[in-house]
Image 1: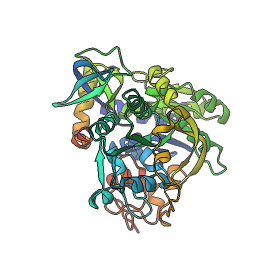
Image 2 (image 1 turned 60 degrees about the horizontal axis):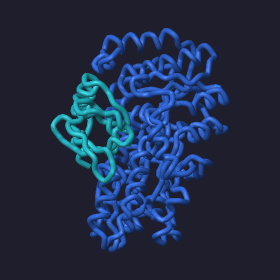
Image 3 (image 1 turned 60 degrees about the vertical axis):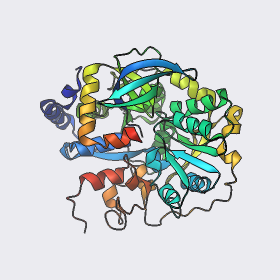
Image 4 (image 1 turned 90 degrees about the vertical axis):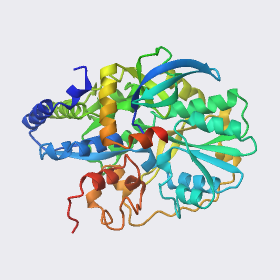
Length: 365
Length: 81
């Protein structure tokens, strides 16, 4: 199939749903990693059309959701300084820190700019030499090449008033953390298509083999999602555990090697704390020592941050697929998109936000 | 965050030693970086994430994706920041 309308063809959707139902003989728990896929499943109603034996659980692939509270609080502390212009992707502004968010910093007079591209942050630094310009470099592997290029540009142009607050995370270590947990229920994965467009999927066969789980690289259209599901269920039913690519029009095995080279030149693997989950070894990227001068944590004193999560929020269990949003006592009550307690209700990719948006007919008792 | 939007490349040029382009997202024109898709040509479609082309795609797929994004997402917000 070549054209996208074919990837949304209702007849093909029905055919694939029938195929999934026909090949499913027992209960399976399958996780889609990417928050964009979570929203696509719910938007198209596909989650409700899967056979009852398939339990779809939602993964940690929402960078806004997993950015640790400490980093949000550090961002808020830095953005509150009068000598700083703080630049960020828009979806970070409403994420609750311990006491407030970046929007409230801006409302209180802080200079907080939303940028479309990290190169805009570099330009802002060039145009405001009397200010310290800080960029909030968050995201998964899809976003890392852009953020890395911003740091390279700042160096190449000798811009001294630019720094980055880094909180990059990587998908494969998170998958291993989920699979290695005693409470893991996930038996198969739909892997994140755009992460793989950058990174390829050569990291996945060893994980599939080690934990004996099928991992299917999957796109974002209804047919993509269901093809991914067919592949995962076929493997599970046959007792196979392989890495497969169902998103071949966008993903090559080796990925975008130029982007990977740039990531490696600027970042190094680091242990990273994930919000609601905890520290996952070697699950993040931080600036490598060659670029330490651009690290906002070296430039500003943010070492004494005291964090306080809402005791009502179960984001960590949601992000590991241990619970679903409707199993949270606060969902739709204390926690709504207007009054979010945790990042998964804020982010456009958060599982809680997806349930809130698409399951308004649910009666909460 | 991992949403990637397709657009049509209308102009390609060098800026600050980077290969850049003007790209048309269904009527809204933005500047993007082609550092990771150096083979891109004017008239082709690129899949764009945070101002960088991460891959190239054909016109029909791009147009259909744009149509869907306009229907179901905060497209204006996404590309105007």
